Image (cartoon, rainbow, N blue to C red; front, side, top):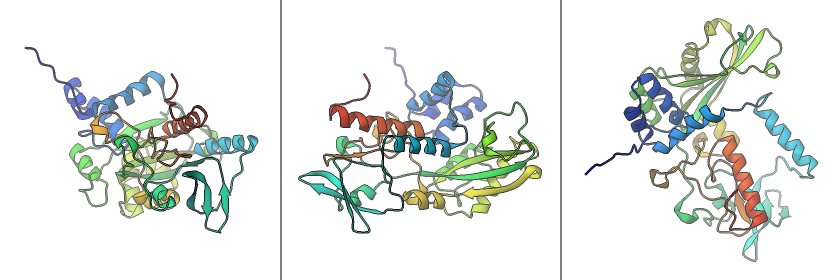
Length: 332
């Protein structure tokens, strides 16, 4: 009787199918980039490098702020009203459905529908402690990983032919995985895997005599290592991809999990991962509908998970649920 084995994790795919450890490191980096241990990441994650190879990646000229600006201006054109600096304290419920929002200044804004894109646990608090997510056996999952990012201004222009993105792999795989699990104090090994971005974008620099570069590494959510200690490790690692980096470094700014937590309200500054099949549903996010009619959820902490494309898809799914009704299951 012939028996076949099927790889269950991304690490097994690499071990069984690849003969060069450098290719294995490349494959596993698609899990590590999201803060996932490739030894526990389902083999379905192998679709990520395939999709990038087949369809490429995209970049917004001027940086992500330009995407936010374009969406904002489009909304204004569609007569959307924004209220900034307004704290929401509760979801108004009337006749068993969401009916608007209550604000800290005592005002109430009535609405036919409410769409929320808030951190895990916040929505339940806004609904007076009543859990409204988790139908179908997929509860809101806590964050596991965050990011340390160093934004760098460099002397000298970007050399012609420079890659937009370079992944500098860790020198010690086991140390990397130990750091990701939280076993390493400070959350970063001495030589972490980092992603170096060097976009060919004149909107990010004052003139042709300067270059803007970003280096990012994954750390466990809530890590409280000194920002400059993390920056030193990231800059050292990035130096393997940018010749003469320290001589060119004009100034830098560090973004830590604390910064992410302060701006998003997510505990530990966690960053959501894309939804992945298998793993017993461990890497799925709750559906976009809730137990409270009229209340929907969008963003990385809802289906289909983290990342800007997925967050955009969550908005499209909610639009479909609103227009087509609860039986809507996406494009057919």
